[in-house]
Length: 130
Image 1 (spheres, one colour):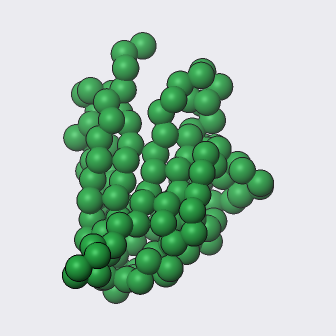
Image 2: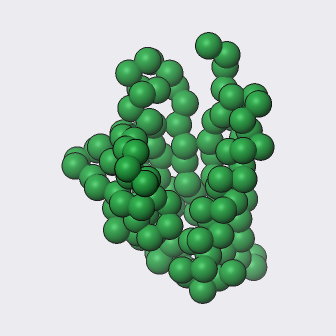
């Protein structure tokens, strides 16, 4: 298996960090834009899309700042890949951005970026930030 490539994306979002954090860190918030349905039990999050299910393990989270998860399939294989959603606030302008860090196979990076762009676009619409 080839190594995955790390990539980062930045999305300006017009919302308070605490409101944005609710949408990136809670099952109900994530269900609104990231997946059709999201359940969590302790450190395990179950994401459901059109009948398919993926589990992710919570690696870390910090209130109003970030959440970092690893797909359990990667975890079981001992792989260190993860995806992180981090809220960044510009100290001077107070502009809020959602920073995404993710990994993909070399030939799937563009597809991964497009997927994030589409899902974050849904999030912006929900927040009235588009």
